[in-house]
Image 1 (cartoon, rainbow, N blue to C red):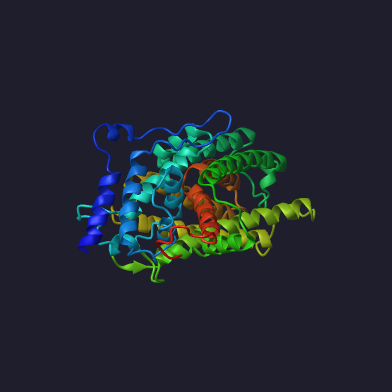
Image 2: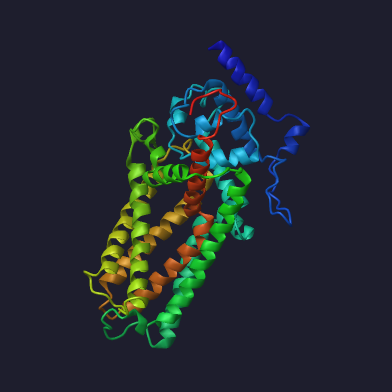
Length: 409
């Protein structure tokens, strides 16, 4: 044990900046080369330096090697550059198991807190790789405010458009949304918003993927990464009992609420896709009856998007300060708020689509949905994309020879 502590102390001394080095290693903005658009890797931010320090201590200990993919991936490295740190931070699922298992966690002088250090670098990647960069920085600083302001602003704009077109209250229209907003108008509005979101996410994850240099993906690696991502494998704490949240007790609720949220979102997306197929391929135009596939899928998805985000918000409010980064809470809660509002307004629209307030309910719902898609590339939704990319890199990497042979996969 004394030898282990000596090694860990030596790692800490190598990674802790002193004197002039501290100013050099202070937080620096990421710069992109004009031609190659490659991430500069010569300087680490303060948060990245902390993760490098923690990883070197963990490399001297190895107690948590079987907890999740982060630690076997760590053992393949003796030094940690910017790309390695961004990769490991997004591979971390913030389950908290390693914090409670660590003998060097606070109040120990080494102050090893893997979940918190990884969370800070993970949030930094959302900004570093964001496109356009200014929007990523804005959402990072004011996630909750930006989310609610965007939803309120867009909902107000659409409400005023409905008011000018004929009034907020009307005779029942039997759920005919196209009598309020023509189909081509809705398709154009959401096509532009959805296209922007996909472009921004695509640019960001492409930058991340190129920077971490993953290697060639095989079919087996892709299948394994998809399996781990869809099952949220690493939210079981490495032992199947779940995450730590408010204390050292294990709970599977964080994993369950993530599943409600993800699959609720996917069901809503499926409802929209099926409705599009009905409209263009089968010539069946909305409104659709309650027992039709689009309405059933949307209703099930809406319920999932009520249960999941409400549960995640409850866990977020209860979570111990050392579990994750407190600075991310506005961003987390902004995304959760938009998901809850999307679900609540969508279900309200379904319930009131045959009433005289349908146009008002439609305008509010569409404004919230547009705000959700506009902010997708810059908040907690983006972490699912980056985390899936990190899982794919790990699935590729573990199939490559481990030249160091210092740990097990």
